[in-house]
Length: 150
Image (cartoon, rainbow, N blue to C red; front, top):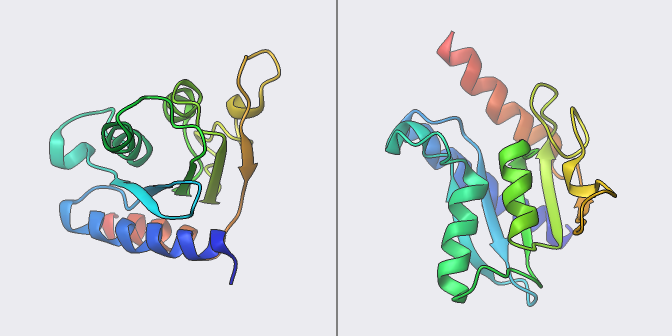
């Protein structure tokens, strides 16, 4: 099992915790250069009534606080669902150099599906993207959540 798969397993475990709050089960972790988890976040929009409380944003805020800087260079963000445009912007602004994600988001994805914000050559900062890590597990968690809501 690769490091990316291991990290995604940690993100998946965190995503399952979002089920208890009624939030869409998406989670993100940020790991430092040594591979240690710096921060964890999961969707908290329903929990906090905050439309910006996506897993990536929650994790980025926690990592910046933990690191004492908004420059999150030498980190990797691992998230169970392809980031949206808002989250892609936050990833760029925080200078995260690598994003690993599981399931594709064909409706709102901004890392290759609908848009490709993180690798847009017109922007000053580009991000390495590793897509589809444990994709089936990530997608199944989301599919199950939405089937139960119907």
